[in-house]
Length: 274
Length: 273
Image 1 (cartoon, rainbow over the protein chains, first blue to last red):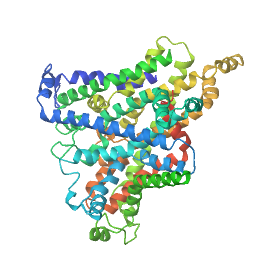
Image 2: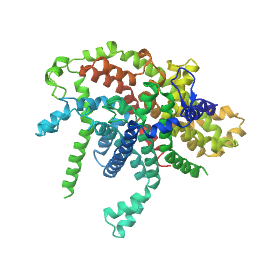
Image 3: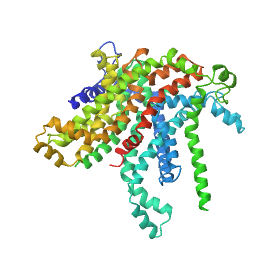
Image 4: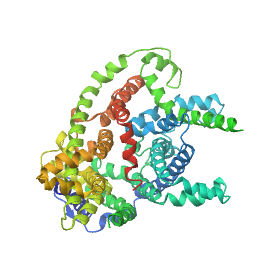
């Protein structure tokens, strides 16, 4: 029964998605089969290439920095001591908010005469002030920052759980052998976290490819597609330009990009089940 | 030396915590300022007024009340239904030798990992076809269908690790399958159910993408997409937008505070396996 429910809403639509990507369709008249035309058009579409590049930048900056930040914070906050509970809670708070709420909080920050501008003025860097979200030069990075702000706490919790599971005796033994704290991190902690690393990596890649809410609420991909991701380009192509076949082709590209990670995750899950 | 290190640790962490909590507090404070105050001094200035009228505006004029009701109408049944179905599926897959059960489990998990973009167009067309388009039912069924795979996977792992002797003992005592499920399995999986419940509540409540895909009318929008609409409606009334933001954030914060332990445990559930 539950399997049937998921089939109706997930598996069957997914197959349809592939089929639509081979058609031209406006949503009103029935779809017409056009073969690989959509993919050929994608290859020459500058907006698509921009969105692809932005998605890669997003993956590297959002993914990379949230792993580094989350791991760093987990290391700093792993030992129970006074105040640690509060600091953990503080970093974790934004995870509870929706991305739309996060976006609005940061909008205030970026407003002309908002907090960012006030701070810059206070330290005498007025000349840097610009319309952060409306400037094609900065829009993408101005959107990544709030996304990071929210993700670091989440990654931190994952790593904290992993760190807790490491046997303290290993660290003790390494210390006895004269390993300094850097060597212990490098040769004890990181190898022991292998399982968590794999999960975090999959979560980050899948999250990056899915990222939509925060961009949609802050810039809708603009100005001039400068903060466009594949996910936002797909959405606006489908539901604003009503080019459903073409949008399906973009969705298939997103799927192919996610495929490696999905397969890796499944292989891991499969091995555990065995 | 040690004192110095402790001191710098706390100084650094307090600064960092401020970086995380500061923007949130700023918005809360801003939601209590009057329009004239913000218009005269800018959103980056310190408050010089206090009013709660902003909440009234967001609540009634901005339609947040309606949106919040919609959110609850979607979130509560979705969470209940998907956990119920997932528990049943996990029970069947972990306790009985169903042929192909491993493939089934992995397929379900794979479905949850799919990027939603590939499903958007077919799902919106399918909901039009079934006449569910633009109703809260469409959103509920989509949320249940999409989340089911992950919940089943987690619950399956949990149930599998329960000792089989309990089930045998109950069978000897004459309990049927249904009774074993409701009287033994469900109570034993309560920690996992609580964790998933808290998590899925925030996920579904915070969702934007599915809501704007299967809903069109403003009156049907849950609070997350409605917040975007509020922004268009009160373009430069930052105090009202801030109030709306606070209203939209309160339910998930409440769930988080109430189920804090389960919540964090749930996030880690998949990670340490």
